Image 1 (tube, one colour):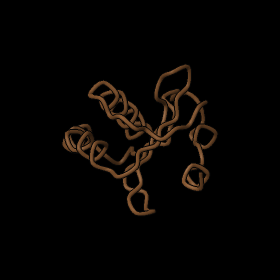
Image 2: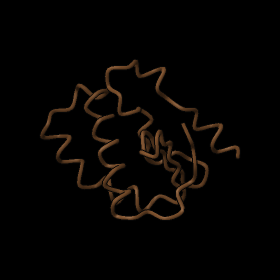
Image 3: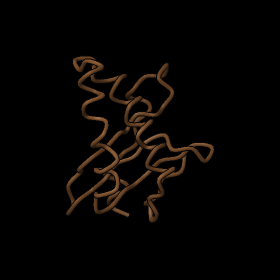
Image 4: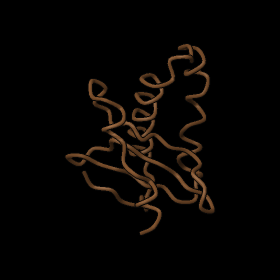
Length: 101
């Protein structure tokens, strides 16, 4: 897995990160209905594009996790890999390590 700061937020990358976000939310936020997720979803690209610093983890060149920071605070994050069959805890990366670089 490779972790990097995203310098260019292309429409294609934002779309890929939106898919990562949706996978994460559907796998971990079981209290949200489909309607609620679909109601939040249109705001996610704006958050991805607007956050001051965006970090992304990739595996085989594909985004698998991301987080955004603003003045040292996490603003949006999706730390779950898209392999839903694996345990969530073992699929997270430590944002603190990224932020210290």
